[in-house]
Length: 116
Figure 1 (cartoon, rainbow, N blue to C red):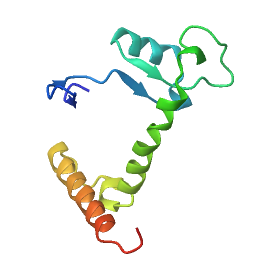
Figure 2: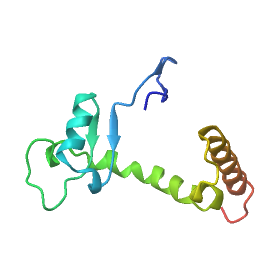
Figure 3: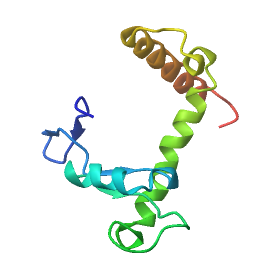
């Protein structure tokens, strides 16, 4: 989280995201409390076994949650690369390099594919 830099309209980069999205598996009080302590707005749907109340559905924005789908698809096609999915590289630097190669490979495949 500390290394994320988000570009803004002024060109200056902001150091942290304003919102964090997660699925219903992250809908726990301690997770929401952690996010609020660090001034993140949670975009997490409420589980069916939870009561409505603080941090519940009233703060949930379904439009922002739908944008999470792009990240899920990205992770899904990155895991098509066996080396990324099994994490053969144990050093973080080597793993980051393999991730970059996998992203370049995917980009070139989409760019030069006749099916797209």
